[in-house]
Structures are given as structure tokens and as C-alpha cells.
Length: 424
Ligand SMILES: Nc1nc2c(c(=O)[nH]1)N[C@H]1C(S)=C(S)[C@@H](COP(=O)(O)OP(=O)(O)OC[C@H]3O[C@@H](n4cnc5c(N)ncnc54)[C@H](O)[C@@H]3O)O[C@H]1N2
Ligand code: MOO
Image (cartoon, rainbow, N blue to C red):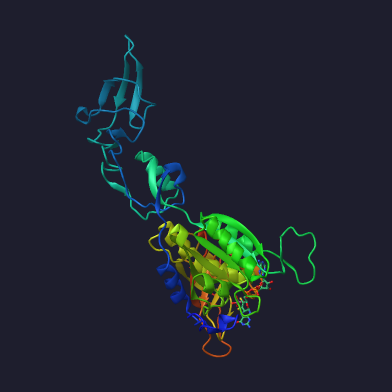
């Protein structure tokens, strides 16, 4: 896959074009889960367990009442009884009769109670010794509660990855630049990818902007190594220009596993491994294309599964849904396209209120050119649009397509109108 020896300084043309699934498999095969660390359970949120957790004791550890009220001896049946000791307020099917002379309190039980009624038996929630969380389990709020319940105050989780992010390019300026000169652009990629990495729970380090010289880019790579990053993400400088220094540098310092992927956007996506012998490890490098949309789409498709595997996820690939397209979608004649869209649950027009029926419908975010970051605004799925078999293929509205889930579907929009018109 690498260019032949003595190849010119623009080697991209020599890289074999991989399919997206092949590129993803290659990345995962070069990625290892990070070593386990022990953390207080309150800090385990968003981590993946490296070792199972068992309940050391039964929960509940005693026969516990489910309801407030009077505990009765089942075999005594209905009748009037002295209140042996105070619990809480009276419950259904009983009547408090007041205090009798001498200070005793009496109650009438109106209904027979079967033995064990409203009593949680010892170990009925969790048995002593039961595995309550397995290795590979992802820790959310419920899992933190489970850890607290069994008194597992220290847990063994995989360390979170450390990601360093670098922008490259002479035209790239700080977002706060007061005024842009002709040809300059504000750096969208770095802040966006730092946010995307942090959003996965990774530690993210900002390496700034490297100007277009091989020495600058190499100095940034050395800084990523010195700071102990597991992953370096660069943007820009991976295509065919004379100032595209990323691939030649990575060839010199390590192994470029691929430098071209059959996808739109993101064709020049580059993945390499740079050995760090003095630390007995390697740095994984993702050279993402400079176009902002290409950089975030390739982050999701290539970097996210890698981060998940490092974090200890047992199934690190992005999740797929089946959605119906809300509008016609043009297919690219050369590459499969990852079309940005907003999926929402829709009920067909005329569906009876209260009847549960509907499906996921995906609306395109509009123009898909890889410079237009607004195509990612609110996007919660990437529609997997196949390459056109003819020069101008169009998928009609209402077609069912697979869609890769981005981030949190819990924030899925709720449309005001109940139904799109595309449903049959
Ligand atoms: N001869 C060919 N040229 C190109 C090909 C090709 O196959 N043959 N592929 C094109 C494709 S597809 C892509 S994608 C781009 C990727 O190019 P680079 O990764 O080298 O990126 P740059 O040229 O440096 O930048 C592209 C574009 O993005 C803007 N940019 C760069 N960095 C940032 C940033 N941090 N924030 C916002 N915008 C950024 C940059 O100004 C350019 O407009 O290559 C094509 N070329
Ligand atoms: O692959 Mo590029 O990202 O099409 O513009």
C-alpha cells in the first residue's frame, strides 16, 4: 500500500483505495484496549469495566417491607390487634382504632394477608456472589447506582484514551483572529475535533496550528509523543499538493496502513502507526482531510471505533438503524456517500391517536459539499448511500436505507407535524 521506494514527494496516488469496512477492520486490528486502572466508583462514569463486579452481600440483606404500614402475622388473619411498635402511617385495608386506656394503640386489620406479602426476601434484588456487572460493561448512571448498592467503591476500568489534535495549513487562523486576509480561514477543525474527542470521554490536548513546513508538522508529532498521547489527529495536508506533508512524514516515522478510502467525503483519510520505542508503545495517527465536514465524518467513521476499542468496548463499531428517506437523494457515481441527515420518529398521516405505529424518517441536512459544516448541524445519522450504478442515480424519497448513528439519539427532534408525506 505504501509508495514504491524513491517515489516523489506527493505519494498519495500510490496508495491503494480501501473500502470503508476494510479500513475500519484494519484500524481495529491495530488497536488494543488500554491497560486497566483502579478508580473510585464515582469517577467510573463513561468508562468500561475491565473486571467483573460481584455483589459481596445479598441485597436486601434482611427481609424488607415493600410498603409503609402494619406488619402482621399472616396466620392471625383479620381482627383487632395491639400495635406492637410504631411504623408509619396506616395503609389500605386497616383502621387505626386509637389509644386504649393504659396507652396501648390498637388497629383493626380488615383483610387476610398471605405469608410473605409485600416483603422483599433476602437476596431477592441481588444474590450474594452474583455478577452484577461484567467486564466490558459500560458505566452509566444506573451502573454507578449498582456499584454503590454493592459497596464496590473502587472499580477496575480501562484507562480513557489521550488524544492530541493538530490543525495544519498556512491559511488556517485562530478562530479569534480579528480580521482575515484574503485566502485565510478560521480554524474550525481543531475546536470541533477537540470537542468530539472530549465528548467520547477522552482526554484531549490542543497542539495548535502547524504552518506548512515538514519541520513544523514533525515538531507537532514529537510533541504528541512527549505528552503521552495515544492518538494524534491531524487535519489538512493529506491530499496531493506539494505542501501535503502528512503522508511523507508518517512514511518516514512509521507505517502508513492506508492513505485513501473509497468514501465521500473523506477520500484522503490516512491511518498510520508510529513506534515510540523509548516508551515501549506506538502512537496511532489519523490524518483527516482538511475540509471540515470530511474531518468530522472521518472522525466518526475511523476514530470513534478506535477510541471505543481502546476504552474496552467489546463492540466498538458505530450502530446502524434502518430509516426511510424523506426526500430524493442523489448518488455519487464514484464513491459511496455518508449523507448527513436528521432522523426522527414519525407517525403516518391519519394514524389513529393512541395507536402505536410509525418509523424513523431521515431528512437530509441539505447541500453536502465537504466545506459546508452546516450539513452536520443537528445531524444524528449518516445515511449510507451506495455508489450510483449509472452516471446520475437518484434514490427516490421513501427509500429505506441504513444509517449510522452519531452521538445521542435521545436528543432526536420531535416534529410538530405528525407525518411526512413519503409514507405509503
Ligand atoms: N488532485 C487532487 N486534489 C484533491 C483530491 C484528489 O483526489 N486529487 N482530493 C480532494 C479531497 S476529496 C479532499 S477531502 C481534500 C483534502 O485535502 P487536504 O487534507 O490536503 O486538506 P487541505 O488542502 O489542507 O484543505 C482542504 C480545505 O479545507 C480547509 N481547511 C483546512 N484546514 C482547516 C481547518 N482547520 N479549519 C477549517 N477549514 C480547514 C482548507 O482551507 C481547504 O479549503 O483534497 C482534495 N484535493
Ligand atoms: O473526500 Mo473530500 O472529503 O470529498 O471532499
